[in-house]
Image: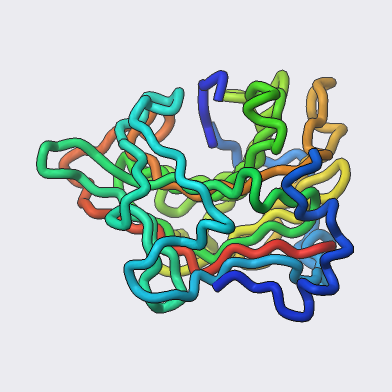
Length: 287
């Protein structure tokens, strides 16, 4: 997540076989550019033979909490290093299942003018190392609204950011409704100077209009980003400007909607609340 800070569950037969892939999932071990470092056709970079090893499909009664076996809520209103405005809560007003197989994260403007939202992580619960990390999401919209699906190195916070590593699978800032961004933040390439690229909606429409699938194919020494199966950039260990590649370790996943901040700017008279990020699923595949 662009920053200036110092920082229906499925286990069925496929996942049973995947219990041998402990390194993949065990939590106990271990300004955007449109020109990526390197790119290849989607058929060359997005693995069609990937096997599902974990997912949360967000099945459950309307108004229920996301599965606590998978998700933590991070809370607080301290700006998160980016001068953001929201107070992250664990309230069902800000994060709840909708009864239709979706998780909904809702950013609200409260009666006193303050903002609330939710930030959820799989830290210590689901921490893959390599694979396709994928979510199908309908993002929110509006000036100052900042949805994200991203990951932090499992060594965080013991290893401080950015040395712990960060993989931003999808970010959008409301003033750019037709663009999503994918980035790496690590030692020597972080904050306002990450390894980064963007994907424009093929028709130039708003990504908030419907669901889209955002993913990374993450292998030793490389990360490839895709939207709806269309790969748009790859970064490798050769692209870090001589700095360390810190992505050969476990990472945990994060879903959040921020309000305001240094990068997106702040809500204005055009921004409508509440704003909802609707997540159909989050899945992890082996490659």
